[in-house]
Image (cartoon, rainbow, N blue to C red; front, side, top):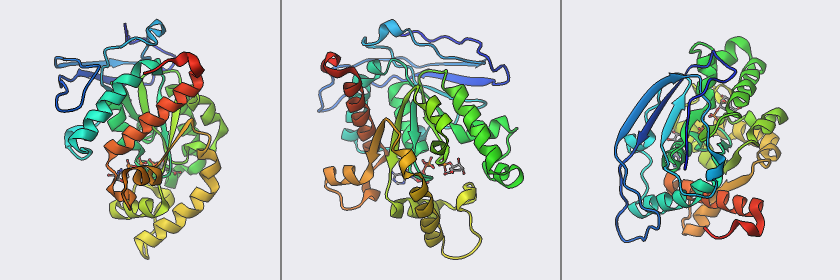
Length: 307
Ligand SMILES: Nc1ncnc2c1ncn2[C@@H]1O[C@H](COP(=O)(O)OP(=O)(O)O)[C@@H](O)[C@H]1O
Ligand SMILES: O=C(O)C1=C[C@@H](OP(=O)(O)O)[C@@H](O)[C@H](O)C1
């Protein structure tokens, strides 16, 4: 039986809004589900300094997944609600089934998404949190909140990257004692070994996205909120590509520290797509769960049994 409780932890300055909701969707359709559940709608909002606890004795039992989203201040609009992440009906069903199979084996451990700017950590992270019944946190947003709402770009401009990195480490330290959170980390969180110490309390997933796709995404949304890519003139795609290329060269070894890697090129090849841009966040989330499943199997060895 899964239990969640709010408990005061050592950081009284972190006021956390946690919103819990049980969604009431019963899967139906042609795919067979072994773990169907019917849930009522429930929404609880509380102001806490929180540590979300999981009763570890429940390790391999089916739990009542409770989708919880958190930020230090406000509940971000769900991507799912916005409708922007929807893959096909079948993809959604596969994702839901897979998440229900895996969730009990996570034992409440947080999932850290790492990867370059624009790799989809936030987008895919929200999908994963929703289906796993986890909270979602974006480390950049938490840093901004700790800096009284100062945007990341301003933190870089006025206080410098070193200051930002210290805040990032602090946020990851705080998150590392929590449970049941999908964390979208900043693209550079991987460069400090101390951050890995914190992230290894959970399971990390590297979203490995080809440079061309990253540059395309970034140049279409603009670089205003991403100070390391910001440029005032020239071709937006080319600028983003060149800068991302240098950063990736510096960081690829650090990304490889992640527990698992999700390669968009591999997913596209498996699905018979020529281009990774055809991949929906749902398809990427399914692959992330597949890779997490492999990781858990390796971790547990033969005693893990079958899902
Ligand atoms: N699978 C995808 N296909 C197309 N666009 C995507 C996909 N995933 C994310 N994006 C878009 O790419 C941009 C960056 O995504 P985001 O999730 O913010 O990345 P990150 O958090 O890693 O910086 C956003 O505009 C988002 O809508
Ligand atoms: O790659 C990086 O060093 C950074 C990535 C950004 O986060 P996203 O990866 O979410 O864009 C943000 O943390 C900051 O601008 C620095």
